[in-house]
Amino acid sequence: MTLIRKNFDVLIIGAGGAGLNAAVQLAEADLRVAVVSKVFPTRSHTVAAQGGVNAALGNVDEDKWHWHMFDTVKGSDYLGDQDAIEFMCREAIPTVYELEHQGVPFSRLDNGRIYQRPFGGQSRNFGAEQATRTCAAADRTGHAILHTLYQQNLKARSHFFTEYFAIDLLQDEEGGVTGALVMDISSGEPMILNARATLLATGGCGQVFRTTSNAHINTGDGMAMALRAGVPLQDMEFFQFHPTGVAGRGMLITEASRGEGGYLINKDGERFMERYAPTAKDLASRDVVARAIVTEVREGRGCGPRGDHVLLKVDHLGEATVAKRLPGIRETSRIFVGIDPAFEPIPVYPTAHYVMGGIPSDRFGRVVAPARHGPEEVVSGLYAAGECACVSVHGANRLGGNSLLDILVFGRLSGLDILEYLEEHPRHGQTDSASEEKAMARFQRFDREGEGIAVAELRAELQKVMEDHAGVFRTREIMQEGLEKVRAIRDKLDDVRLHDRSRTFNTARVEAFELENLVDVGMSIVTSALHRQESRGAHSRPDYPERDDRNWMRHSLYFREDDRLDYKPVRTRPLSVESFPPKARVY
Ligand SMILES: Cc1cc2nc3c(=O)[nH]c(=O)nc-3n(C[C@H](O)[C@H](O)[C@H](O)COP(=O)(O)OP(=O)(O)OC[C@H]3O[C@@H](n4cnc5c(N)ncnc54)[C@H](O)[C@@H]3O)c2cc1C
Image (tube, rainbow, N blue to C red; front, side, top):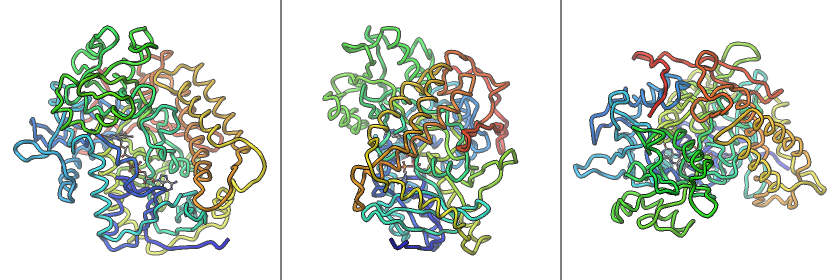
């Protein structure tokens, strides 16, 4: 096997919104940029984003970035870093205008301005009234954004490695990152991509759960690659369950359906959210609505023959509104449950949707990690942005419409920071041979022969364990058992065998690498969750029902080595305004 080596100024792993918005900054500056994606770029999960992107444009009612910041801090259950949140909410406004100028076809208000809709957890005047802040292109906003960014990258001549799978990061002797080992999926051949700076923009890991809104490709590869390179994962206990997945299937029915005036009912036809969130009702924060649905079902007020879901009504909005504002979810409902939401309610139940945690990075996209018991340091040459990163702007619970914002703002900022970094680092680093050998050993791991466990079998087992033991409500017993089960699955990885070991477009091999990544990510979730003894945001523990600011206003850090945990303080000081101190979180 000949090992091909290529040099680039910058390596970007991931062609979703985060990766593409970083790449365009760099390619426009005439740098040699490699963008690696395991699928065709416009099939990245960003394309599936429905509802929209938040920015206080004030096109419908008066709005301010400061109110957006308040909502995001409150939504995060005070775990988000307030400097990063202030930065993101301020940057939101120019970011959306820039997208519009790049060609994103936003829906329009009658006066020609960008269409905005209300979303969960949004307010004006610091919680006083509902705001209207989510900028949308019908219910296919991600599609519009991703296609535009891809076209901008083609124009700027970013170099795409499409259908290449990143295996592992490469490092110099000090742990600085020098590029990555990737596999050409079509030929199964390995290739070394050397770069002066590497950005991980590999998206989320929803596939670690059985019922999820996430695409098949969202397997946490970048997070696991960071773990294997010695970088911890931050706040992984915080996983968002979106309240309205198609019941039993998991596909997403966007929050925009409630933003446009839809609401939830139980088997008695009751609008039950009025009991859980008297003011915001169906537009309370996602963690609140998801818990309410699970509680209704557990207390016997679920719908259907098995009483295992609730109903989402949008039929009262009229067919014209559904057709104009919610065409995507209409199609999803028709295809997957044979229901036309313009005339009938949709059966829904919470679905694993978004990971608030990820690779610890600062607001310039630089990955920061503490040395063993030492202070936090920037990992030389390594950046992370998008859902795989944790800046942290979402803290314990993300607001709808804030993730597209996060990927765009911090994708762009990473690109700009890399420009500066490259000025100071004109030469390529020297990859340590041990690091390259380790990566190659992993690449060859599934060449081993003999009978063993099938990938699909072990993946299904993991997904079931995660769903049963790290779901919407979690107790110590449940999670302890979950931890042991995930550990046992990790041990079984050594027995995984491929039935087909051929090289050419062998998706089974890709799925085997993905399974290993899912197991690492699953371990980080259950380990961090078991140790956080409080309820905050999406982490809800009946055995510790209260938020505990005295002991737990801190971020968790999970290290793969010895499954060790560490903690670091929340950054409560914003950049230019007063801090929002923790308060009871009611909607
Ligand atoms: C159904 C759905 C609807 C959503 N709706 C909204 C919404 O309305 N508003 C909102 O704010 N957020 C929404 N979100 C969340 C938001 O869309 C995502 O968090 C965001 O798009 C993630 O973008 P990203 O750039 O980080 O990653 P992604 O878009 O997921 O891209 C990841 C990229 O990494 C590549 N990759 C991964 N692993 C490897 C590997 N090993 N080798 C090579 N390449 C790799 C993939 O090929 C892909 O190109 C939604 C999410 C879902 C699932």
